[in-house]
Length: 144
Image 1 (tube, rainbow, N blue to C red):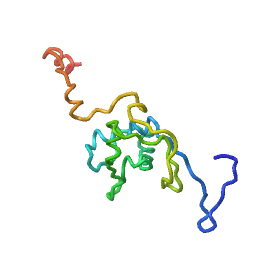
Image 2 (cartoon, helix red, strand yellow):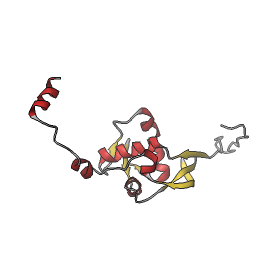
Image 3 (spheres, one colour):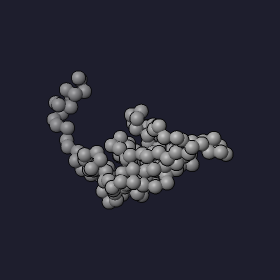
Image 4 (tube, rainbow, N blue to C red):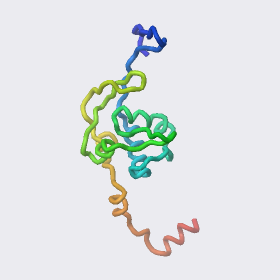
């Protein structure tokens, strides 16, 4: 919080402040993880770090995910997939007031520029699978 005077709502006593959220690498990686295991369906969050989990809801500000009616469930949006597949950039910053986005700021950002690699669909990931090696190598791994 800055040293600026914060206005208080006369009706609800809430702070009258806007917050600026930056589309960070952590947010982009959490979207990538969610897209991979949810396969576009409604799903709960799992297999994420604490930071990814607690900040995941911020992806709503860019319209990349939506909260589902079932408690704790989320779904990636069409824009979320377009962002992952480098079909659509999203603004660098989202400005919010009381949890609702009111505007955007900054240049458009693509997923691969934020995280340093291109998102791979499941099919692409599977195509890159290579045989593990000989039976002898597999047995050594099992015994280790």
